[in-house]
Length: 144
Image 1 (cartoon, helix red, strand yellow):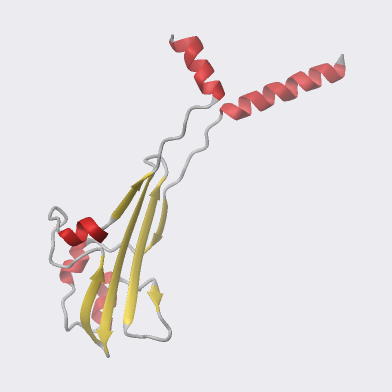
Image 2 (cartoon, rainbow, N blue to C red; image 1 turned 120 degrees about the horizontal axis):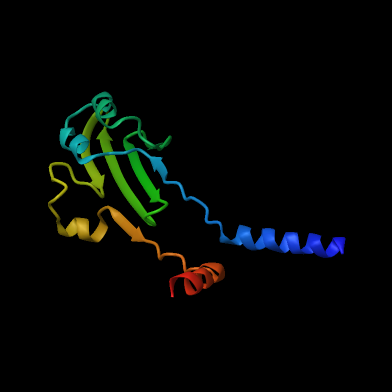
């Protein structure tokens, strides 16, 4: 009789643990570069001034010291979205000459251009998880 009760207890524990959903955290990686920060950047600025406004770049190529890459990724757990933003700062010596990437300086967040539609901030929707067996059963029993 004792082994049967152990098997029943383990089966009940397994069934209950299958119903538990895990909490998904927001995962941020890289540098947050806002439109207000990019509006402060102008050609002719020095590397020190750009670093003061935007912060330390995420990637500095050791073979090409004239390019800084700022990358930001946010994977929102509950909202199931993935946001990507990339900004490339190009220097000539110690002077800023070009800004490339997904965000263009001098443009407000509400304006939209063809460049933004083609390669702007990318938002990827993840499909919601399908309800499991126990959740469907629970809904049938208690909600119908």
